[in-house]
Image 1 (tube, helix red, strand yellow):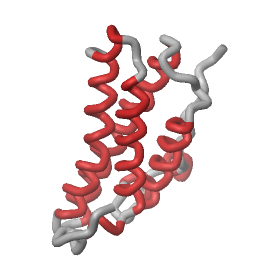
Image 2 (tube, rainbow, N blue to C red; image 1 turned 180 degrees about the vertical axis):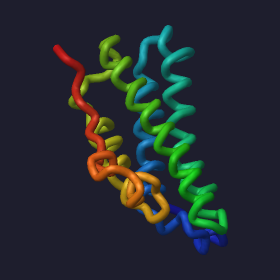
Image 3 (cartoon, rainbow, N blue to C red; image 1 turned 60 degrees about the vertical axis):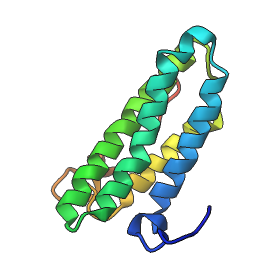
Length: 141
């Protein structure tokens, strides 16, 4: 990654932001191989959801308070859930194999988002089982 005058910003040090950027790249590469009909619907939605994740992590990290950061992490987590659903739909349509490494990347990112300070999923006010990392499951055969 190119380091320049922006490298003092807090999100540059967050592993979740780095993995989210890797996920964006993986989604763009993956959707390039979608059939032409899929490029203008599902692929665009997947790309938008993917780009939303690191964008919200960065915006949240730029905020002053933990509550604001948590709000943006929740939006990022929502975009990740949206993307996971779209990946499963792409799998249902045989556009992507459920063994594709992108599924592992989404699982890793979900764990990282859950572990960030200010994350509502790591808050003590939620039941213990809801703070557990999510695992994207393969669709039933």
